[in-house]
Image (cartoon, rainbow, N blue to C red; front, side, top):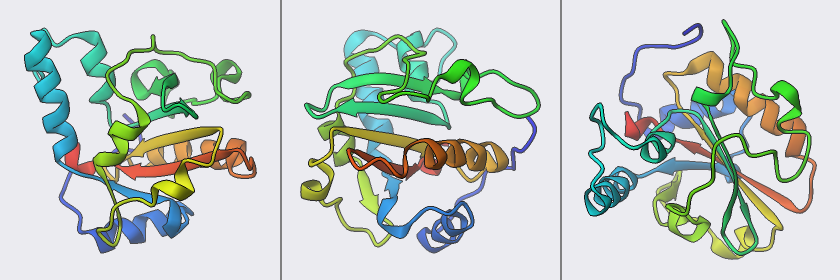
Length: 185
């Protein structure tokens, strides 16, 4: 796909530098921890899915994508889900195709599941300084948007982040977490 780079391991300071280039405020930058993969692998074993195999459930595949947007309501329930597989567009992904992100919450593109709640996701995040997220500042919003991005998706990550910033950064009742997910890959 156009705009992809070879995957490599980045240090937190390197991820911070890329995030600055993408205009992500330091307070909104989070790093996904490897235990996130362990969580989904354990769910897969529990329900008979085999992560990273050809017969992996569609539901599991949705959560293993490099670019994702998840909308959670105040109760922590997933109310809209999007990822790179369902976006369409060539050579660039067209994230707001058909006005997907013209409302709050966005229009759901992927069938919703109950595998991930907001409070569960938070357990797998750290700030770029290695600290746990500040739950009090996050829980005061009507909606929380988790935007998963990766350095190896380069241009495609930047385009997704720009759409989220353009559509939601000025909304007071919406909080956005920009989550670097390189560790998944």
